[in-house]
Amino acid sequence: MSKIGLAVVSPAPLIRPNYVVNFAKNCEAMGVDSMWTIDRVAYDNLEPLTMLAAAAGATQRIRLGTSVLLGNLRHPSHLAKIVATLDFISNGRMILGLGFGSRESDYKAVEVPFDKRGSRAVEQVNLIKRLWTEENVTHTGKFFNVENLTIGPRPIQKPIPIWTGGSAEVALKRAGTWADGYICGSSAIPEFPQTWEKVAGYARAAGRNPDDIEKAGLTFMAVDEDHGRAAKTIENYMTRYYGKVRGEVASTSLVGSPGAIADRIGSFLSRGLDTLIIGVADPDPRQLDLFGNTILPRLQ
Image 1 (cartoon, rainbow, N blue to C red):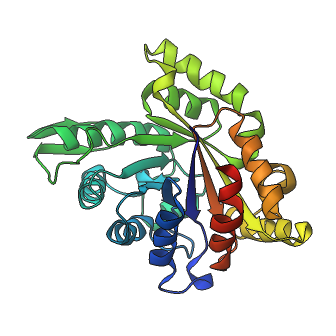
Image 2 (cartoon, one colour):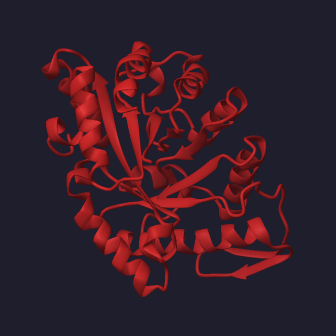
């Protein structure tokens, strides 16, 4: 059965301090599968792993994920410890979604080279997996070095699922080669079957079963009976976050009335997605009420 997750994507100036905890509690109360956060440094969003720690303490059931975390901006030893801690305090509910980033400003902010970020991320993932499962880890690599390192706590999940995103061919290959899940971007969801065939091909070439890889998509939502106003909300969000509107909003996002959005969600899920992650682009808390009371029942 397909699963629905909701993502906090609003920048900090548009939300109140209690928004994150209330968002998490509402996700759990309405019965969605998961809650997600985004990651930037050179932007005014809330720090994603801190948000998930707050959500872990406010919930008991929903899964908690990053869609996606720029893991490259953190040392793998530190990131392994933070994510293992999140998995521990949430009793095994963490999903680590990793991306590589398209904005050099985020890398400059923490003095990490922007070049070779994909290769850096692959080495990082391999080291993190070792640190979660082994003792006295020694690693001498192109980007990272650790000597006789043992960290704790151990994750509850064995292993914590690591998902990845991206649309470039090298990103699809990474997803097929080592990821536990693949997150498709909003503009690519309508053509997801074609994208997935590439990921599945890389998985088979690596000796993996593609059915073991979670198929996910990230899109954005604005609920409003005025379709044009809803579309404008999404466009404003995309312009603020990405610097431009990505794709044609009416066909790649969830905009308009509850009925129209429920139909579009059904259409997206019919593309073969296991999980649809919905970024709530309008920070008005009533958006969650509209989703839980008027959209989710139509899907069930």
